[in-house]
Length: 297
Image (cartoon, rainbow, N blue to C red):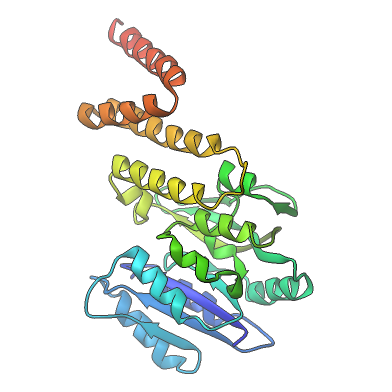
């Protein structure tokens, strides 16, 4: 098998059909498979996945089970079921808009064996506001680890990677975040970014970031950054990871303090002082000054 499409889904009834349609519409000059990991959704997601699996029996492999196993376990079992030389990822609430997306990326990786991965641009669709905009405005370029850690450079659905780069050493890490995977691959080979818009990333209340407790999410981000720290090249400045953690907890502090959730605000503040004591003091002073100024009017 040349290419595997890995689709991970849970409670995506309103979105999964667009995702699957984008996958089955790909035009390739080689064999490919679509592996769907469906995690016992409580809505109609499984029924839609079964409908597509029945319509494309030679193309789609559906993986599900009697219990919900969670995001990480579902992702790992779906990855393990993929047999292609190259692997594409499209989460169930995102979708591809370009039927030549996989072929274009496959051609690039076949012609450039020193690259471990290729990624593209995409559209961000804000489902709350009904607006859309490009994920970024970058030109074609190679991306290194410090780019990947600075901010999100591309949507997950835009990626095609070499599956043989995910060697046994990856199993030593209990990863569940895509940035970890990109950094892991950046150590195996070069990463090329192409400015072609080929996918849609849905931003809205259904996603894990917005549906989770914000403090819980910050702690999860901290865990993922600690995982990333284990695979960074020797001598890499790990202050960038501490700044990522600090920024996340500071955002939670402001959010919780403004909402009157002072218990979580204080817990977030404690983490901020752990990472950046001077910056935290300055930020909190400005915040309290603004609050006092408003209350005195």
